[in-house]
Image: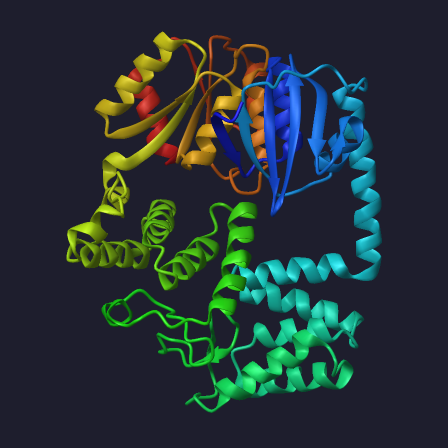
Length: 447
């Protein structure tokens, strides 16, 4: 029961359940939403039971289906008797209605806009976050919390000070406001210019060249200097930052800001294995950003020089980050139910310098995409129970993966099939049996 067969991140629970229904899958889904955990039991594509925090059956399923930005682990189906008699499609329609009602209530109060702004600021999308906060504060000028977040997105010391003064005048007893002003005043004496950055852990203003925050004492960079220093970060600030970055990574598993923030909190807590894993993933996602590979190699070299006992406690990532920038590292995901066809395609691609990941059906394809982002997808139209057009629609609905070019493979050549593929978002359309040279030329065109 506890053996995890696959993990899926970045796709909505509704999309996963759609694939289960079409492919008649039978498994238990362990669904994570920040610190909450729920279980959904699927038998032959039908939702038969659910469990969360004392709730079971239909009530538990409804609560879980309302969650957004979840992590999903696939387990062997638990031994359960059917406790839910409603069809999956009816449940999803009801949940969609409830979500719309909640969203409308939040939109009326402005909390949706504020939440989106906070997300953008935490993901270091400062320009977009600033724009949303300006829009929010035009409508809610008396919200002290909004002014605190407005101060956090600023790089100018005086604008930051005025925003916090406004927040304090509006709600002097607010704990967040008092804490933020205290941090600002304590950090301000260390500032040497009018334009500053922000601490990755406590949000205190810091000089742009600072490598250690003067307020929470957290190291803001992995360098030879910070490696030589004793970790001094305030445990409370570090713990709050870790919780924040963990939530961000769960919601945005490929966010470089979230991964690097989590790497830094692990580094300050001497959790070097987690630091290495986060930096390694960031280096693979953005091979052109040398900062991640450089800091990863710096930490690896530092650990290699330590005593043998310390070195044995940390495992070097299986794939060195430098490989991510080599020509042979271009990853193609081949989604094809025929093992023979997959092998032919894999050999052909391998001979032309591509790496290949394989999937036999829709669910396995989403799992592979969660593990490592492919640069291109070769997708067979004829898959068991769920066709390639349906899977393509799910991929194109996803904001993180919709930009990946998808080339459809099919034995059905015809104008209507090509039009359907284009309308679904396919980059190209290859007919089987395909010419290897043409396939490689088409892939090179879209990489």
